[in-house]
Image (cartoon, rainbow, N blue to C red):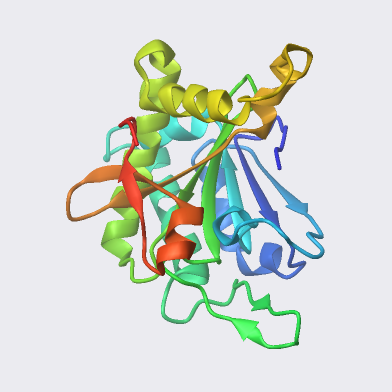
Length: 232
């Protein structure tokens, strides 16, 4: 799934009540000098790997968002943006979260989230069409969340400044190359970049971004991941 929008931040959700719950947060965005938009989507039945399924709220961010997040802490619009991210945390990852996702089984039961929250993710889309989604561990604290957002903004800003040395570029190329194995040359087109969907999470202990492997994690029943930009 990709999203093209002129807004600095797009809130993509499948709940019509999310806009009302985050109204104060949206005002904070405006105070930070950032434009925003809300898109309601209807995902329907999902057959994708669990961590690739849309979260209850997906924040699609542009380069201006990252730039504003990295401004000096004393500046007013930076503080407004920090308040926005804090409000989003309260509504999606806090102890009294109200913007949530419930995964239902074929038989009618529900499946709890494992490792990562299904309530919130932050997504950046590169000009060529590939995306990278920041996942949040279930046990993440408010302080850890704030650092993860900050580091993700730095990661995107560094990629925009020097894509040739970016670990995100490495991962995107690697993923596309692996997905193209066995395909005829006629199908290896520029549009295939849009099929590349990277996943990352910030490890607060090692202070490094990791890439989780959904397939290996499912098979082994535990999180399998490697450092972002490292060979498997």
